[in-house]
Structures are given as structure tokens and as C-alpha cells.
Length: 582
Image (cartoon, rainbow, N blue to C red; front, side, top):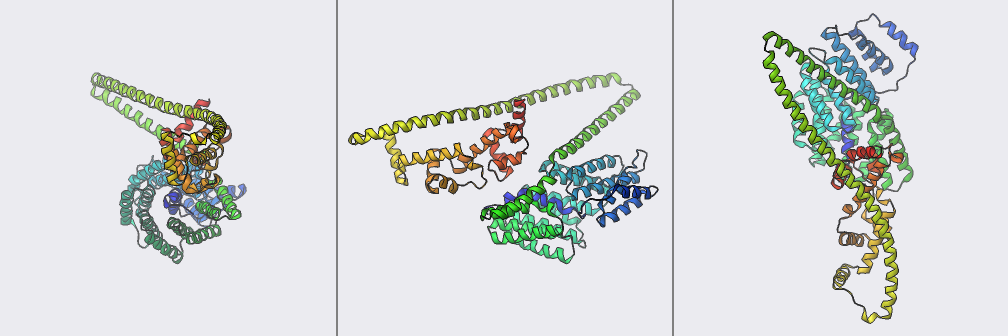
């Protein structure tokens, strides 16, 4: 298991987001007739009482009944309601969204949160807006849109003054500390962690646990792995002692196993992987800890146990397919974007109306008209400049895409020619060997060739041996896809060409003038480019899946290498490839 803690970054952020969700999880099931009776039962009941009843059902794991009752409450929404009634509708949306969130139905959760935002922003004092935006940030971070997630956390923190609840503020600050820890921004992580300590309730076991958990993450990222692991172990015991939900034990187990992976302690890592998996299965929490299944699959694969590796891989893929429906998420995300744009336009319209009324009152239409004209000219000039710059930028991206596309096409043609040339050279070499045998005493080597041969002999390879090994390496890279294996290494390449790692590394350095990964990565990136264009066979894959299919274990590494080689991001290249195909 040759992994670093950075390789688990995405797993860590998915894990941290689940920490502040406190609702239990069961399977949604109930009959329509029962729901009809339930709706009729609460028809004349005040909204506050209905929410209390829904909360009771939710604690009893009757999620279907709870969702129906929350729907009854927010279905009563009217513009004429007072602030308290509107806040009750927003709270119902929030609670319904959290049920869907805990059931891993993130698209429906986001829909509920968006509706809650719309209701909250009609309140003079939106009590639940901070919680709703905090949960929206959680959903975005689950889909690896870190910047948007942090943006919503900041918005939630600004609105937390209306909640009058230090618990909400504490949760938001811990989320921000966790996100900045994951992104490697330790100064901000420490800043928000210290702020969260000021809002912590020492008498609340969940607050105490979460505070210790955030501190352990910061310790591990700072390199104090032993201290972080010790704290996590004590937190696992604390969760049992305080009878916290079982998922809190799993959170500690998972982070401990990742820390042991970082230290190369495979046996200890396996122990805590199994503890996390066993506990999550016992309490039906598998979707919260799917990354552990992937780690178990990789562990057994590295140790040659194919059966167990495939078993955990199958469970991992099954869970991931069920919870990450990106199409539904994109639809919900677009709905939020549309709402925010419409809201801004309404605000602009209101400002314009008030301005017109003011102009009529003070009768300065001419002055304002001139001012408006100047503003319009400046705005149009600014927009024109922005448009022109955007057009140039778009053209630059298009040129980069064209250069990369032509390079790949040209490279394929050159490879074909090189193969033909190799055949010709081999035939000439055979003739030359015959001539050398007949006239060995007059064989003449060029001064440059003598220097190169002397260099290779000094290192253990003759010039001819180095060339043969270089051809074998090139043959593996051009005629196989072995480099698509995430575990592809120098040793594996050496085995495939029938040599050893030392000689293969020597030839790559001397012949191709590159390090091993600098030599391998362009092949991976060019194959990824080809797969982005081949929508018929690879159009159903996400960019992360394409990255893994060409040998990158980390999506962030893939993006960095892709941009370094092509000059543009994978998403931009994929979009241009789709437009080019159309």
C-alpha cells in the first residue's frame, strides 16, 4: 500500500461533511393510503404542532411520515404570512432536505434547500437561512466543488446572526475549518478552528467530539500524525461512552486508517478499515464510508487477494452509483443559479423603480438622463472590453485545443512512420552485421558514437544494448496500455521489457532525457484527450473516471499534469472536443 495522506484528500472532505448531520437513516417505505389519512389528521393542526409531530416521527425512523408532514407545513406558504409562519415553512424545507441528505439523495436534498432559501429570503429575520446555506455548502463539497462550497459556508456564517443559535455558528465554523484543512490552507483552518472553540458548548458531547476531530485533522496535516491518531482513538472511545451515534466511531476509525496508510503501517490500517466497515454495515451507514471499501479493495489487490479485492470493489461501485447522480445534481444546481440570477434582476428592477420615483420627485430628469447616458457609455465600453478580452481568451483556448489535437494526430502519424523506419533500420543492421563480420578489422565508429558507447559501458550497458532496451520501452508504451494501471511503476515496466529497474531508469534518463513519470504522463494525457473526443465509447464517463482509466490515482494530479502538458484544463478540453465533433 504505497499511498500518502494527500491521496485521501477527497475521501477526507466527503467524510467531514457528514459529521454535522445528526439524523438517523432508514429505508423510506409507506403506503399512499396511510399518508392520506395522516394528511387528513393534521389538516386543521397549527404548523408548529405539525413540525413537532414530524420531528417525533423522524426520531422514530418513520421518515416517510415525517417528509409528508413537513410537506404539509411548507405547502401552506403564502406571501401574506408573517415572519414566524414563513420561518416555519423554511424550517420544514430544511428538515426535509436533511432527511434526503442523510439518505444520500443529494439532488432532492438540494431541491429542498433551494426552496428553503427562497422562503427564508422573504423573511425580515431569516432564522434558518444560515443552516440552509450551510447544508447547500455540504452538498457542493460532496461533489468536489470546493470553492462554491466554501462560498456558501461564508454566506451561512454572515447570516448566522439571525439564528441566535451558537450551535449553528459552531457547526459552520467547523465546516470551514475542515474544508481549509483539506485544501492545505492551514492558517485559515486554524483561524476558523479557534473561532469555533469560542462557540463550543463543553456540555454538549457532539460539540466536544467535533472539536477534537477537527483538531486531530489539523495535527495530522501539520505532520503530527502520532498525536492526531492518539486523539482519534480517544474520540472513538468517547463516542461509545457518551452513546453518540455509531457513525462517530466510524469517522474516527476511518481517519486512523488513513493516518496509518500515510505511515506505511499496513496491518494497523487494515484493522481500522475493517472496524469502520463492520460498524457501518451493522448500522446501515455504508454510503457514508464508501471510500473505506475502495481502500480495502486496493489493499487486497496490492496483496494479491483478487477475490476479496473484487468483493470490496463491487460494494464500493454499487454505493457510488446509487448516491452520485450528477445529472440530477446539475439540474438542481442550475435551479439554484437561475434563482439567484432572477433575484438579482428583481433587485436591479426595484432599484430602477425607486430611482425613477426619486427623479420625478426632485424633477432632475435632465441631469440624471445625462448621468445615465454617461454611465451607459462607460458600461457599454466596459462590456465591450470585457467581451473582446473574453473572445480573445476563448480563441486562445481554442488555439491550444487545436495545437494539442494536431499534435496528437501528428504524433500518431510519426509513430507509424517510426515503426516503418525501425523495420528498415533493422534490415540495414542485419546487412551491416554481415559486413562487420567480413571486415571486422576496418570497422569505424564515429567519435560521437564512441563517446555514447563509452558512457553506456561505464554505466553497465553498451550502446547497442541501450538502443535495444529503448526500443523495447517505446514498444510497451506505444503498443500497450499497461501505463493505464494506477500501480504502473518502473519495476513493472522493467519486468515487461525483460530488464531491471536500474537499466530501464538509465535508458529513460539518457535516451529520452526524462524521469520515469515525466516520460509516462504524456502517454496518459494523450490517451485521455483521445477518450474525451471518443464520446461513443467514453461519453458516459465522468472526467474523474477518465482520469482513473488512464492511470491517475488522484484527480487533482490529473488536472495539474493535464494543464501542464496541454495548457488547458480537462473540462475545457472536453467541451471543445464535443463542440469540434458537432
